[in-house]
Length: 424
Image 1 (cartoon, helix red, strand yellow):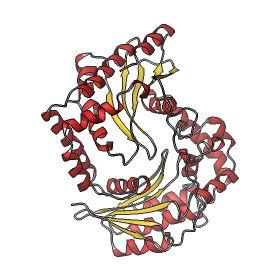
Image 2 (cartoon, rainbow, N blue to C red):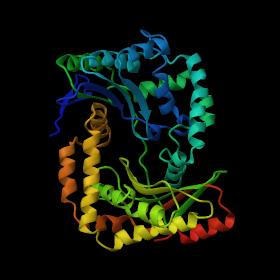
Image 3 (tube, rainbow, N blue to C red):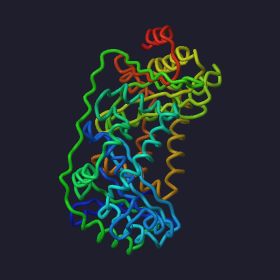
Image 4 (tube, rainbow, N blue to C red):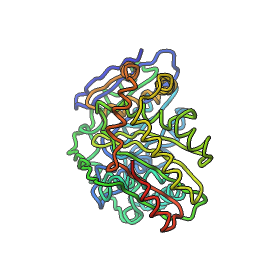
């Protein structure tokens, strides 16, 4: 059984306590309801850059070394991440050290210096991070896909931003964004694992003193598409990396879990339909995967693969064939049961670790109207029928929701034939 407790601090910051019996670690995760979808055009990339700057020193710990040395001394793991709709900071330690980790996290998020010299130095680091993503088509095709889906809007911009913006940011930009987006109105704190009363007391004291902030909400996605869309990034590579997506639903929609299950059946395992048809039978790909992404105001299901040059059209036709098939007939009982077991088993394995439990509740608190627990998910999962999966598939399998992103060398003739094949 999974249990959690939610407490509102004096400044209304939610504190989620997820106690785990029999574990010897504890995790503190601070989630901030802001990310690249909360940025204006001239701010694109600022959420991610700001995340880096929290590790560059505070008034008490004046530089990167003094800050990281104290975190390293805890003997655990620590990091941060920025996405489209949230930013997170976590420390995982041995049980008994979480109160120290909380003090450091609180200091970072409330007293960072955002030193101008460090900002200039970090620009080079982030540009190299951007280069790394762009040089890895398997990773970058996801960004190209979201650009295809959402266009020139915050939802379609790369989280890391542009080189032009990265080079142009000044200290005043960081201070303005930090004061607006970071504070009691946008922060949630999650403690998981072996939690002591001292850890809870530390969280109450440290984060209960965070000031209110004039948080600015993001602009909601407005999806307008009448026909299939194709975006190609011509790049000299040894293979074609592609992502073929369908627009779906946002977080909390009644069909969300059915679509998650649908993605597993299509390409979520080595026994999935697209793994067998695209890799084992056709020999067209080494990696094949289908995933379902859900945001608060939109969602999509996508299949990614790396295929030989000149074979993109064939791969697209195979993927579309499996899309059509799953919308036209019920999934066999054995296949449906296997997919449910895959989701259930993977979740159980993930939630054996305190950091994964913290992540589970952290995403929930910033993305959903109410907190649920894994037991509720399991119950809903087991109740889904083959007709539910088919209904979800029929809802999203539409030409006007098709989006194809490609990275690689595609001739004009091949582009024309791919575009012609892009239909359900």
